[in-house]
Every structure is written in C-alpha cells, then in structure tokens.
Length: 397
Ligand SMILES: Cc1ncc(COP(=O)(O)O)c(C=O)c1O
Image (cartoon, rainbow, N blue to C red; front, side, top):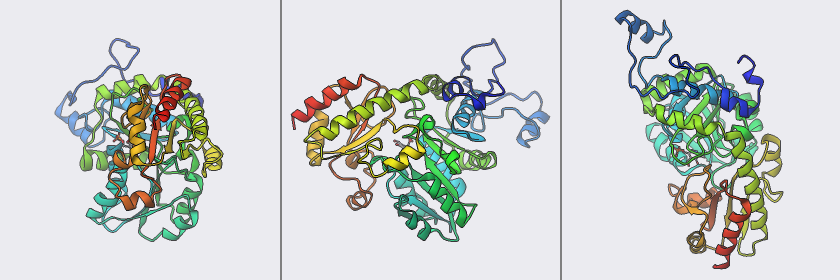
C-alpha cells in the first residue's frame, strides 16, 4: 500500500508494514519461531554478514515476525525506522548506550519511571557518564545545563507517575540550537502514538514500553526505539546486538501485532474513562489533589493540549498518607492492585513503594512524588463502574 503513510492511525496499526510471509497467504503474520536462518551457500552467508545481500541471519539481528512489527511501529511514530526489544528497559538502555559513553553528559528530567531513573542515576555514572537531573519543564534550566559534552536530553511526557508535562518542541529547539548532534529522547509510553508523536515535535528518538498500551493485554513485556534510519542501525547493531542483547521474541511480536489491531479503538476509551474519573476525584473530599493533564488545574494542561491529541488514560491522586493509600487499594474490588498500565483492567499502585522504589525519600521529594500519591492506570471497564468502586473504597477511609 503506497500511501499508507497518509492513512489514519487505525489503518496503519492494522495494515502497516510489508509482510515477508511467502508461504500460504496467511492473514496474520506467522510466528517465525527460529533462532537462525539457513544460507543456501557459505558464500551467501558471507554476503549477508558483510551487508552485501538482504536476508535474515540470526534472530538477534532480525526475524520476519519482529520486522513486520517494527515497520508498523515506525509508521505509527512517523519514524524512518524502529527496533524492537524484549522490554521497555531494553529499549531505553540499548538506546542510551548507543548515544552515551564515558566522558559524555546527559540531561534528564528528574521525574521518570523508577528503573529508568535507576539506570541514569546509578547505572550510567558507573561507566563514566555524567547525568544531571533537572526539571525539563523549566526551559531556562535546560539552557543552563547544556554543555559541550552533552549528548542527550531525556524525558517522559506525560511523566510517570505525576503526569508532569514537558514542552517537547521547545526542549528540542533549545537542545538543537545549542548543538544539533544532541539526541532528544522522549519516552512516549503514557501518551502512545495515538495521542502524541514526539518526532513530529522535534525529538530525535522515541522509546516505548510496549508492555503497556501498544500490546494492551497485560501478557507481554516488550519495548521499542524509533528514529532516523542511520541512528536506529546503530541502536540495532551496537545497542541491541552487542550491549544489551535484549531481543524481542517472535511470539511476543505476534501478540503485540494482535493488540495493535485495536489500539486506535482502545485508547479513546481509556481517555474517556480517565477524564470521568479525574472529574470525580476532584470532587472527592478525601482526595487531596488530582494529577491529570486533562484538568485545567494541571500545570501542564495548556502544553498538553498543544502537543497531544487528547490527555491519556493515566492519572494519579494524592491521599492523606501512605497508610491511607494502602487502605484505599485494599478496599477496592474492581480495580486491581498491580503495577503496569495500558491494560484492559484498571490497575492501581503506590509509586513511592512500588514503581518508584529506586528513588530515595529525598529523591522522591525532589521529583515531586508525595508519599500519599496513588497511580491509577484506567482500564476499559465502564467508567461509572470504576468510579463506584473508588467511591466505596474512599468511604472506608
Ligand atoms: C514510562 C515507562 N517507561 C519505561 C518502562 C519500562 O518498561 P518495561 O517494564 O517494559 O521494561 C515503564 C514500565 O513501567 C514505564 O512506565
């Protein structure tokens, strides 16, 4: 389909990519459950390794089921290329190792998924990479921290778990004006490509935990990195092949492609439910504060309205204390106490003791993550029924 690039996100998610399936004309891409690929001759094997002939070699370097999925995600993000990984952390670490090295400097927002924070705070400095954590929504702070050896600006928007919004276009402009070689990397997990395309806003690389909305069914761990073809070749041949080896299996790729067929239907329902729940929570006397970019009270509301098509299915809220949060979670009947997000089931968790436990108490305070913060990954149940469950649980506080 020549004009698929101009088609809707729904059509891209279903029909994107060129299937290399040559067997029986199966509608779904088969699962090429193989570690290696047979060469017709030793010379052919040599040509493939030398990059002189196209074709599969070994599934750490590429696999037809995974390749089709990568093409679809590249289309969804408007990227030249995409590489798939066995987790979101695989995508993030492979990408960052392809950008940074000893003596380089990274600027990262202070509010990040806990393990991303751990990688940047503890992992990369161990190998000589300097990382400054700042508030990237403060554009003057971004300007002030850029240095000659800065190679990357890393952020999430909306950020996990406070839904903090960064102005992707402005951050990218500032970084590139300082040095066009700096890679602006955006984790687009919370927004999904249905609601936000960071590359179109000027970012260089988009990373995803595909464990979340992209797969959408709570049964796969996976990740993606998308960007320019030459950089993604580096990410594949250095970051993935040599540094992390975090290869996505074909079975998982198949499941994600199945999930993607309904992505454009699922995301609006998550958003509709999240909006209703955020409005209810604003009126709930035992809820101290609601963090949802769709609310006018959210400090990033206007920027979110500018750069996102809608405000997403994630929200957080604050209760009196950590103990009150635990009591609330334990009183819920429909909402499930579990980490992860983007699934059909509404999931609730306590960031300070769960997803963001790599942060110390001081680091949590610095990142604006209160002890009493509860994160709600709004699911696809009927919104009124989720609210009824929350109401009965709040009544028990
Ligand atoms: C925003 C964000 N990025 C990255 C990750 C890491 O993804 P994974 O668990 O697939 O490794 C997560 C996981 O929760 C996340 O929430």
